[in-house]
Length: 526
Ligand code: G4P
Image (tube, rainbow, N blue to C red; front, side):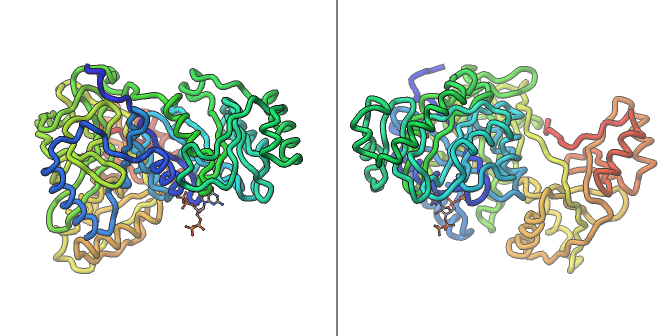
């Protein structure tokens, strides 16, 4: 494979709402220059036309597609920042997005420490050993002491922590940030245009008189004391341990006041891994493999309500992708010509003439591509590891106007494709059951049914709250189980058998009594 293209850093920011992800994203884009990828965009006229199409769609829908992926080039590297929806109810979508990144930045609010959503997302990263850089945000405000924050990360996440910089005071006493790796002091009072270089003064070390000139006596004394203690308490930076997901380098900063943002960008450039192998059957896809292979991790439907227009976001795992290529859709074996692939730049999108492992391209389609799909020049490969999660809320969908059954089916199908809901077809009765992980998904469902599909529907309580996919090596046992539990049996959109249960306790009970049946809370698309 050609090595002349810039290397990639494909990453996501994980955080609890309000920790500062949006602010940090913006500042990273500013610090990174958020510029186009030179040399990769050739068909200017065509690209401009495509761009205006998109703008129109976005205005109509009042959404921003661009925010799903933000690509920028900085110092010879291409950064692909994937947005993870912040709300916890959309965790399923978020989980899938995290399967498409090679590393993550965990943002923690200095006043709050680790919050529930941070923890959940961290656990997903850990499942895949995704390396994590920690950014402790808002040190310009009163927060927990640095040691307490570091210990919390170490204890609750069972990670070695390695502070890379240290705040000189916090909150009202905040005077700047000291770089522990390449001694320097970043002082407050910088403006945005100086973010990149302006307020960083190199010093020889903590005893350098130049440092004393920059900080108050009190702040300097505290900084010396704390950093001395820190160097005794915490691990040294170890690139291999970070890449294994065993150690997290920690940056203190303030996204709002632009502290630590450049250090974070440099850390991503210097330490974060480039494209990693992707789990697949029969063998993992290596970024250096010649054949183009990628997978769809997200689908955004109804970009334009008048058409079945949707964008599938594909992460490229191997090979050099070129516009117009025909790729096989795993499972169906259909060849799909990718003639209008989109590349997402910070404020724009362009036609992607070519793309490399780690890149994300948007593929406009009419509903043929689904989350979890493998797209490859090869016919014998399936990317794995994109699970569906067992729903925690199941509701019956009842139509107010029974003549709208067809529209309802289509709407539920669309939204299931986007991964917003799951749909189950019960053995008994004609009402479809929707399954979600959180309440907000139900609200989105009802409002979109009304606004986009003109279908008035009500959600009714169902006797069940959760579901498990069922399978068995003993076909007769599976059949017997389904026959005994007809009232609680259903199939999912792919026809896979599902058992619906009142609660987790019932799942446990039934699981124990039927050892021949496998009950799984996640289902991978194959
Ligand atoms: P999110 O995407 O993670 O939900 O967080 P977002 O960036 O929206 O930030 C949440 C709030 O925290 C915002 O304030 C934002 O200005 C503030 N914030 C982010 N980074 C910092 C920081 O480094 N220091 C301080 N002091 N505040 C920070 P808000 O009042 O909710 O919104 P706004 O009215 O300021 O926009």
